[in-house]
Amino acid sequence: MICIPAEIPLDLCAIDDERKAIYHSNNSVCIWVFVSVVDRNRFMKETAGMNKAAREDFYLAHFNTELPL
Image (cartoon, rainbow, N blue to C red; front, side):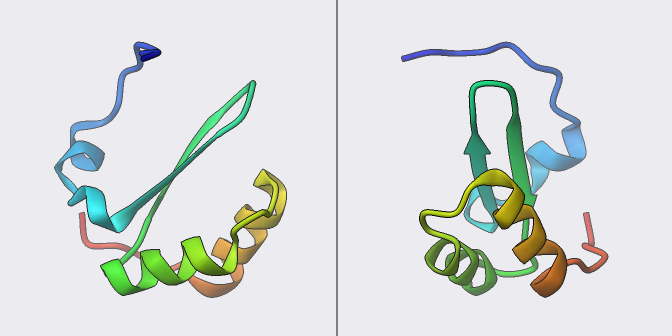
């Protein structure tokens, strides 16, 4: 196990983990948050194999909405 200390905002921690998708590379960690588990699962299925930039573009095009935190 590798654990990298970080200061994660409490609002983000309070969101159900099943509504989050996490991506990491050698220089960043991204956490995408979705309105529903269905949306999260769709994102994971449709972006499988994409790099970070492509996933970011997909998220912005399909899921960029204000979320109730």
